[in-house]
Image (cartoon, rainbow, N blue to C red):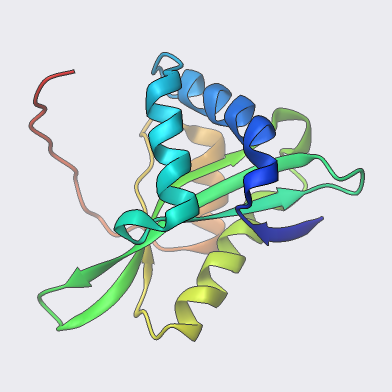
Length: 148
């Protein structure tokens, strides 16, 4: 496996995986949302970046999206890992950890103080990975949604 930054020629593969990722989280596939996210990734709008995992055959096997955020309590900047996806046939081979490690390496280079993410409580398989590589921040997420 190799890890590479998002690049325009990977859109079609990324779009397919992004759709499956959304479906796995219970969100319908949304072409407009995918186009917006892709444009953010390429332009690094909002600081959003992406890394792609490419298998030995040159196919996309997973991705992660992340961005910096200010830590106002500490006066520094950290990294929020927004999305992490590994293709079903690639799960269990360490690819999720490889993607997280790649984000952590970039975060260290940039002087970010931590990498933080959330997980759905029922996603036991992903949480087993996360509990191997990180500590539970013991934060509960609340939200107020507006519109669609």
